[in-house]
Image 1 (cartoon, helix red, strand yellow):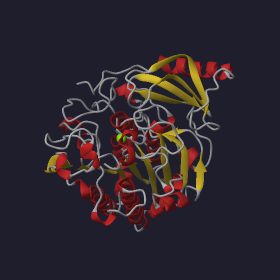
Image 2 (tube, helix red, strand yellow; image 1 turned 180 degrees about the vertical axis):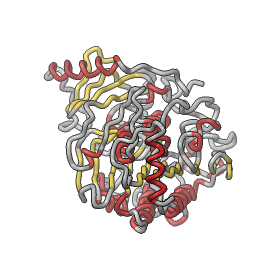
Image 3 (cartoon, rainbow, N blue to C red; image 1 turned 180 degrees about the horizontal axis):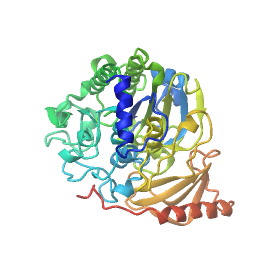
Image 4 (spheres, rainbow, N blue to C red; image 1 turned 135 degrees about the vertical axis):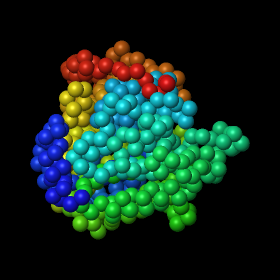
Length: 460
Ligand code: MG
């Protein structure tokens, strides 16, 4: 499709009931690189002392580091649903208090009534591809190809599912992983092309697929969603990265992802659209700490994956757009993966549907170095609202460790932390700040008026 066809397409959309908001003369390509269980402290540019991430460090030097950027949930499925839809998972049922994610025996998935970011961008003529871990339903109606993506290649759920019966019991399989212990499928569009997926080359193959997609798009804007299966356990890397990192196996995995980011950015740099491509790098949730040295690190943040303490949801995030985002900039604005939906929609000139509650705010003011529009951030675990953040304050209504504590503790008198002063959430200052508690209670009251839970897809 050349530019003239593209403009014609926009004209047709404009006269077929699709409202185009902003100028769409030259909408940017958008790439979202999404890790699985990467911790806030796992990149050199976020302070890790022994994991080498030169390509991510360069991405940070050429773009923006976001130090207060969050996923919308502390586990995979709800987090991904929120990224895809710009909505809290409780609004579309992609969460549960019983089963935290989708499993191979799950019958549910992302509801057809949801509008994904890919469906949104398709309205503006974008080519779309999902390469990697999906985890929003592996049955036919829920696959990426039925949710706005022209192309899919990847493992449709977590790489530790479909464990075979004779694999070593408990966590032993994870500490000496072999490909054949997990019978996970690798899919191309709607077909299984390999089973078990050879996970040792999975990062490399996702990268090759991503580069081929970028190189194939000459005259059409594109949206590439690249959700890596790693560093979710079991940890696998290709030959070239074996025993490479001072951090051991987990470090090898991150260093291969870092290589992959370098390859993807090089493909963009070499394309005609180098100056018109916005790339995000982030993760779905914090590190899986119960796997000890096989899990990552949340750095100075408390707890990890599964928890609504900061380590469960604050992600090491980078944004890169040469010529637009100031080189080497840092934003401390509170922002969310859900905001990518509104940002991409605005850049593509596609109106966000107004028939539903959205939780997405345009990030461009933040990426341009200014103040964000997001007034508050809500921390959910399943359907439970656990905490809220506004500005530098975070208030916990309930707390629960990621693992080993079966029920949450409800705080009749909520806990309060100043995250600028106390990012590790060590010192409760609620007693000294009753007016802040009252203000945050007010924010929750307003939020709850429009927070209507949908039936769980994870319990089907
Ligand atoms: Mg995850």
